[in-house]
Structures are given as structure tokens and as C-alpha cells.
Amino acid sequence: MTRSQELTPEALAGLRERYRAERERRVRPDGVRQYLGADARFGYYAADPYTAGPTEREPVRDRVDVAVVGGGFGGILAAARLRGQGVARVRVVEKGGDFGGTWYWNRYPGIHCDIESHVYLPMLDETGYVPEWKYAPGEEIRRHAVRIAEKCDLYADALFSTAVTSLTWDDACEAWTVTTDRGDEFRATYAVTATGTLSDLKLPGIPGIEDFEGHTFHTSRWDYAYTGGTPDGGLSGLAGKRVGVVGTGATGVQVVPKLAEDAGHLYVFQRTPSSVDVRANRRTTARDVGADHHGWASARRDNFLRIVSGEDAGEDLVADGWTASAALLEKLLPSFRRPPGDRAAFEAAYEIADAGRMNGIRARVEEIVTDPATADRLKPWYRYACKRPTFSDLYLDAFNRDNVTLVDTADTHGIERMTAHGVVVGGTEYALDCLVFATGFSVGVSGVHSGRLPVTGRGGTLLRDAWAARGPRTLHGFTGNGFPNLIQLGGTQSASSVNYTHVLDEHAVHAAALVAAAEAGDCLVEPSPEAEDAWIASLAENAPDHEWFHAECTPGYYNAEGRGRPNGPTAYPHGAVAFHALLKRWREQSMDEILRPRTAARS
Ligand code: NDP
Image 1: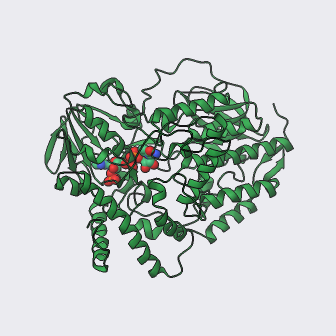
Image 2: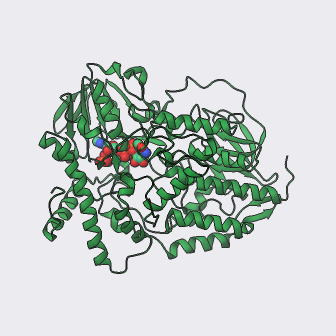
Image 3: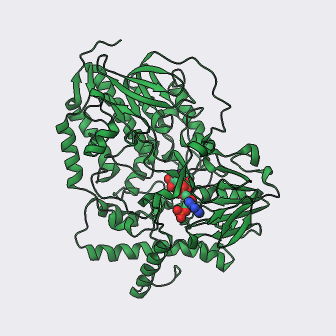
């Protein structure tokens, strides 16, 4: 079906059936267990290729005001906002060799942000920086992370190439004891965790993965020593080589055109095609984005958040592929928050809006890709936003090159096996010199509730055990009873959105306000069990219903590989705009409710 075809009841029924069949073709019984983590025998995949061996240093044994776990945008923003509140000693502890998080690790060729840079890069008003492109390259974003860290003097106390191994509350001195894998043991009055959501790379559990004798690496640890070149391309080391790439998600879509330019031959092993919409990246001037007064960036970012949250925003300042979906999102997102009155009418209207959008995406494949069989395999057969939407003006065109072959692996649930010389799909062996894994990241493993980072609160209670026994318990997702002065950023029971740096910045402002209020009153930050109960009850009362949507989607990390996403009080149901307003109101009117007097002297 193409864009021009009418959305008759028969056409819609056909589409429904096609989506169902495509989902069936892809669901695997092993679900999330199909993947391998980069630990133990695969630990070398996670080694840091960007910082030569961590420099020797003495273990740290002092006391700081705040320990921030993680130096990505969440940690940087928390530290920056704490500085803004006058907090003197803020120590960010980061596994990578510098600030940047995602943008430190991901430096693959072609890397760009596909959220507009003027709304994605935080603290533009404060730093006076105006991005030069509508969608910034990764290196510009990484440098902006460093810019904020330098401006806010975050380097002085930071520890890099260091992983926090435990956080333990010490009641006697009312502080956290922080230990790390570099032998540090220091105290912090407050601990802020900003451990990210997609930070642990995953590999496909392909039988024989260890037998391959060629070169392999994951896109989040790009091996420029092997490929040559830079994130802008020029991968001279791949000249004449047979290169494979596994994965066609947001990363694959960006990296394929660059590999295609320089590889002798590129094999793209696809399991599920992405929806690839227009990107139209271009240079922008300060004038284009109205960057002529303080506050321009936060106004633009608010405008984008309103639109992608399905709220009325008046004019559309960003006007891109995300906001073009606003009509669809306006219908979809509120339905997650409250069941639509007339379910059948809602589903019918939603189906038509969705089919229009996805037919447009599929028609674009036909317009660009010249070989009809290849074009057919590149068409996504699922609803918009079942998988993360992608945007590219280069990806589809790469399949028109003679040196690029698309290998569809859907029928075999991915690559069947690997041999010493290459990979096998449908009984055919593809000989390769190099195989790049663009296979994404594990979800839900990096938060403090996962137990990876043991957090021990008052009375020796492990946060992981407490949550396992009674479910997550927080006030607004940030703080919990029994875990004084622990503030979690970007976690469960709060609200999120596609422009994640905006969400993190709102959380950082909130975290800094909590610390400032506690410092001003010489208090601890700790909600009562009653405050937690009330918050959880309010989430449960309005528990979102997104099960119906994800249950019908193709498998991926959005729906736990096809299992669906559980309903329940896991997130604030009215969206990020309402959540940020609620936090602001609460700070103005009710923050005292979680402040309790300190009893211990600071040492
Ligand atoms: P994804 O998890 O989105 O994609 C992984 C890819 O690997 C999928 O295409 C998957 O196929 C494929 N795959 C996994 N196992 C196999 C197998 N055994 N055989 C064949 N294919 C396999 O990871 P990404 O790194 O692409 O993206 C992760 C997230 O990072 C994005 O969703 C986005 O949030 C973020 N990101 C953001 C960018 C930005 O510009 N803002 C840019 C890049 C990433 P299948 O779909 O069938 O599972």
C-alpha cells in the first residue's frame, strides 16, 4: 500500500493483518534472554577505546557535599544546578575518561543527535552557545557537555575512569560512604544517582559468536585504530574489506551510510526495518532560531515538549519529523494517560491517523530505493512509534550503491550462526573481515534498583531488596523513606519524554532545590512512608493503559522484546509537562514535608 492509496476499511483490515503477521514472524521465545552483556568473557567489548589506560592516582578519602554517580548529561546537569545553588563540593564519579556519558561512549561515524540541537543541548541560555546545525554531530554535543562542566568548575573534584561500587548510609554521621573500583572511600552528605537508561551495551547471542576470526566491535566503542577516519568518515582502514553491520535501529541508520562510503563491500544484516523519515539537516544561524535574548532556548525546548507530549502549544517552533507526528501523538499519548471514552471510535480514528503516517514512510522507501525487492524489505510494517522513529536523508539511498547488500534475517530471528569466516543467514555464509554490532543497549540494568550498584540505607536495608519486597517506593521518583539524602535522577515513578536532556534538566533543578532547602534548614531529605503511599496511590489511580499499544507491536526494547509493557504505577501518567509543573508547585508550597532536622554533627 502506498501513500496514494485510500484508507478503505479493506485496506485497513489488510494492514492490521500484515502487522500481526510481521509481529508473529519476529517474536522469539527467549525474549530479552537472546542478548549477551559485555561482561565476563565479553568484557573486552566494553573497554574504553578513547582514554589510554587510567592514570595512577591515590585513593580519595575525604568528605564532599554531594557525590554524583554518573557524568553524562544527568550527572553534569545535577552538578551544574547544585553549583547554581551555591553548593561547594560536588564530586562527579564517572566510568568514562571524561564527561559526556552517551556522547562520550558513542562516537561512531555519522553520529548525530536526531532531536533538534537547539532543544536537545541543555543550558544554551546559560552558556551562550548556539549550535550551528539543526541536528548536531556527536562531537559537538560531547564538547558542549565539557563546556558546561568547565563553566561550572566540575573538573576539580571529578573522578574519571572510576565506577562507584557501593553507597552506604552511615547514621552516626548522617552521610553516605561511597566506595569505588579504584579503592576510593569517601563521605558525601548527599548522593545523587544519574546512571542513565541505555548505558550497558548488548551483543546478540548468536551461536558461534566467539568462533569468528575477523574483527568485531560494538558501535558504542568504535575502533578507529582498525577502521581509520573520524566520526565524519574517511574510514580508510576499510578499503577493500568485507564489512558487516548487525542492527538497523537509530544507530544503524546513522552508521550505514558512512560504512557504505568506505567499505569494499557492506552487508547490512537487518531483522526489523526502522521507520526512516525526512531529516533535512542544515546549517542554522542564531537568527533562524531566535537566539537573540536570554531564555530563547528554554522557551523553544518548552514548546517542543508541549507538542510531543500532545499538548496545545500554539506555534511549532521546531517544525520537524517529531512535531509532524503531533497529530498522532495528540491522540495516542492522552489515551495512555486515561482510557478514551469510546474505545472503538478512538481505535478507528487512531488507526486511520497511524496508517496515513506509516504509508508515507513506506512510500518514501519506494521513492528512494531503486531496486524493488530491496525497497520491499526496507518497509516497516508496524505502527508509528512501536520502535524508535528514525530520520535520515542518507540511509535509504545507501542501498542504491553497488557495494551495499541488504540481508534480511527476519525469517531466522536474526543471524543464524557465526563461523570463523563470517555469518550464516538462510543457509548462506557471508564471508566478512569485520562485523560491527549496532545492537543497542540493555534496559533497566543501570538504575540503583537493579542491584548492580548496591545502595544500603538506614538499618542496613538494601534498596534492591526493599523494592523487590514492596515494589518501587518513592516520592516523585526522586527520594525514598529509609534512604535519607539519596536523590535518584530520571528514574521510575517520574515522567519522561523523547527529549531526554530536557527531562534530566528539570530533574536536576529539582534535585538541587532539595539539597539547597536541606542545607538552609540543616535538615535531611527523606519523605515519610505516608508521603510515598500518597504518591504511589495517585499514580495507581491514573495508571496508564499502554498495554494495548505495545502488545501489538513488533518486538524491541520498548516492549521487552514483544512481551508488552506492564501497566501499573511505574510512571507519572499525565506526561512530562504536567509533571514538571507539579514539581514546581510542590517546591513552592510543600517541600518542607520531606525535610527533617539533622542530629549528627558534620565531620
Ligand atoms: P536498538 O536496540 O534500537 O537497535 C538494535 C538493532 O539490532 C535492531 O535493529 C535489532 O533488530 C538488531 N538486532 C539485535 N539482535 C540481532 C540479531 N541477532 N540479528 C540481527 N539483528 C539484530 O539500538 P540502537 O543503538 O540503534 O538505538 C538505541 C537507542 O539509542 C535508540 O532507540 C535511541 O533512544 C538512542 N539513539 C539515539 C540517537 C539520537 O540521535 N538521539 C542515535 C542513536 C541511538 P530488531 O529491531 O529486530 O530487534
